[in-house]
Each structure stands twice: as C-alpha cells, then as structure tokens.
Length: 216
Length: 191
Image 1 (cartoon, rainbow over the protein chains, first blue to last red):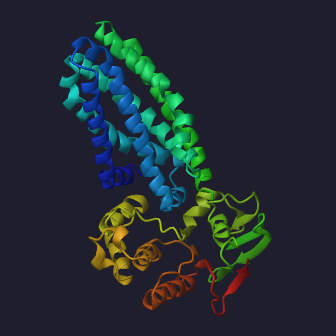
Image 2: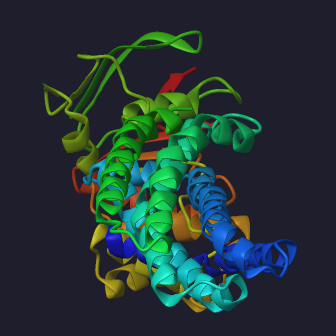
C-alpha cells in the first residue's frame, strides 16, 4: 500500500509543482513585504514560514484524495484487505516524501532572504518535518469529512484549522528557544507528542470516516 | 453461494430477498435512479447492509473476508485518470500483487496493449471501460458485481465481456449485473 501511494503521489507531480510554486512565490513576496531590517526578518520569519508551509500543506494534501474519490478509487481501497488506517498512513508517508521534503528544500533555498542562522534554519526544518504528519493526517481527515459537501474547502478550514494550532504553538516555541540560545528539547518533545497525537487522531477518525464518505 | 434476506434501502427498495447459486447470473434491471447502483454497492458491502441480511456460503458475512471473494466494477471505473496505462498497470501490481505479464495478457485480449504509453484521460470512454474491465481476466474472484458493464462498449468489446462472463460461470462463478437492458435467459430483479 505504501508503494502504491508513493507511486500515486509521484504521478501527480504536476499538481505538486504548482503547490511548490505557490509556496516559493509566497515566501519570496513575504521576504519583500517584511522589509530590510534584519531584526524584523529574524523575528517574524519562523512564524511566517511555518504558517505558509502549514497552509500550503493543508490545502494541497486533500486534493489527491478528492480526485481518488471522484474516480471511484476509494471503493478499490475499501475492498482491499488492508485496513483503511493503513491506507491513510501510507498517504501521510507519501505526502511526507513528496510534499514535506520539497518544501524543506524551498525553505533552505529562500533562507538567505530571511537572515536566519544555520542552527535556526535547522531547527525550523526539524519542527516542520515533525509537525508535517499531523498536518497531512488532519488535511486528509478534513477532506474525507467534506467529500460530499459543496464548498468543502471553507468547511474544511473551519473544522480542521483550529486543530493545527498546538502544532504552530509548539513549533514556534522551539524556534523561540533556539533564537534565545536556550535548550529547546522540552518544546521539541511536546511538539513530537502533539504531532503524534494529532496524526493518530486524524488517521483513526479518518479510517472511520472513509467508508461513510463513499457510502453514496 | 450468496443469500440476500430482506434488503431494504428506503425509499428505493424494501424486503428484497433472493439466493444466487454457483454458475448463476442475476440481472438488476430498472430505470435511471431506480436504485440499481445502490443495490450493487450494498451487495459489495460498500453500503453496509444490516446485520443478518447478507450471507456468503451460508454464513452471515464478515465484510473484510467476504469482499476478498468479489470483484466490483462500477460506472466509476477506478482508474487513475492522470496516469499512463503502463503506470496504471504498476499501480495495480502494487495494489493487488498481480504479475505485470498477467495484466498485459488481459490488456492484449481487450485490445488495450498498444495504448501503454497513452494517458488514461486521453482514452475514449469505451477504451477506459475496456481497461477497467480487463480486471475480469487477471483478478480471480468468484463473485462478479458489474454495474452497467456493457455501456460504452462496442460490439467487439461486448463480445469479449460476454465470453468472459460465460467462462466465469463455467468455472463455478456467480455474477450480478446491473443494466437498463434485458438479457436473454437471465434471472432478474426489476426495481
């Protein structure tokens, strides 16, 4: 199932490229909008990059699932002996490889524009990689919950976006600790715990929602 | 053997019961919106039937086990529209664990082998149908549930499908078909 999802994500490289294009452009514009003051750039960059990366993830990951539902591929998944949760876990892994890693590369590419030191950059990338599975699992859950509704995108934001706040809070707390030169390991542990909890929550409720979403 | 007792999905149908033996075909016939696809999805367990209404080999079905006996092809063809035909083969390999050669053999039978490098989106409706129906030849399952399987197929395609059906029944298979059209000497439920 993991191989299937990895290959499936690879096949949708076109929509992935547009997602990455959107993220690059947003980062580029943001760096200009923040001005030339190094203090402001350093102070606001982590939060802005985290929010932009989260939103990009959040609105790109459910796209693939919606397409699969439209083509009748979710029936094929439900008729497979694998559990629905295995499918959703495979999806998160595939998205981690094909969305999270390229987003990290883009962050690294644009990092000179935000005047971030290498240890701050490392910390930012690490927090995003840890938080991504939860973002992906929640995005897919939202997509399943709003599969049969009109204007699902807005509903999805209302249902799921508040759930991502703990990720943002702990992710930025790690960044703040790093910038102040303090030990960030406790915040990092919290972030890992929250990410794990939200991933399990998203996948568990998602595997319950999957058969209901295709019952049409 | 498949037993259905008191299947109900108000307001489309209620108290529907029948028994389907090996080598038998059941045709679900009805007008548009009569509930043919809904009924077929219930047979496949995609719409959960109530407890003790669906029996396979005389036992109340446990969905995940029962579903390993069936091949369900709906009017949504379960194809990755963005993929090339050869990519679709690879995805089937990962999903079903079937060898590439077996799938390609079936595609040759359905006349789809020359289109390996063509995007599924760009195939005609009939060709997409052929690609999807090729599963009948490489996925061995005893119960076939086919929704509007003859639609969009040309005479040649219909002949391949009918031959596959005949061969399946000869090998002790069961089949449930949904269609608007009558089929000669086939048991039917009219919705």
